[in-house]
Image (cartoon, rainbow, N blue to C red; front, side, top):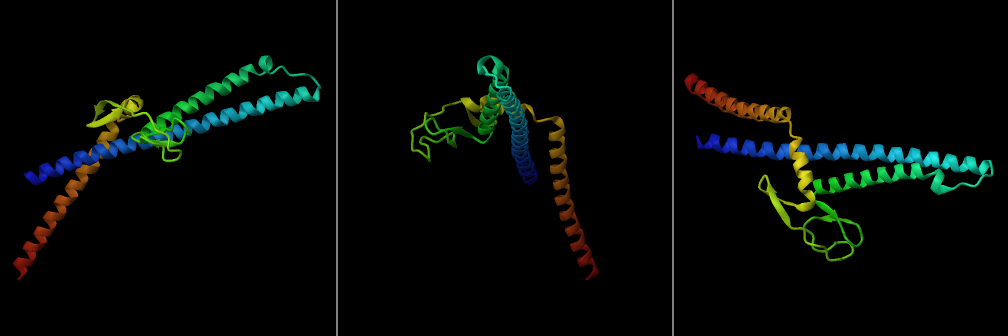
Amino acid sequence: MGFFDDLSKKASETYRNTAEKTNKLTREMKLKSLINEDKGKIEKIYAEIGKKVYEKHIREENIDIKSELIEECSKIDAYAKEIEDMNTEMRALKDLRLCTKCGSEIPLSARFCPKCGSQQEEIKPVETVNNTEVPTEAKEVVEQVNNEVTTETVQEVTNEVNNEINNEENDGTNTETNNENNDNNQ
């Protein structure tokens, strides 16, 4: 039974790793899509601003940016903040952060930036999730990703693992049966 216990443990471990990676990739793709949507909204607002400015130019009117464009600028600021928050979440999913000096993406564990050489603050783990130390910046992201594992995803992966185990068992049984038949025929 040791073989089946080991196989079961490996299957469970493989499932957990696969589910974790799948959830991270799914979340990353969703974030990229949302970022693109926000960028499209910002482009539309830029066009509105340009149209307003040009219309004032055609009518030879002065434009007061503070009063006439404040609403559009506020919308752009809000979308830009959303985009930055989503980029931060994506970096956390990839175990990356920004260099404090040059702004390059660097590994969370980096003590020095590989681009500018600037020393980075050490990020101390605050807790463990699934036997992995989680830095303060990534804690919320990891919790969110873990919460997104649905029972459907768990069931799908479980079914796949069970099918693979059954196929391996059947292959072994068929080989033994064929060997017995060959022995009987001789």
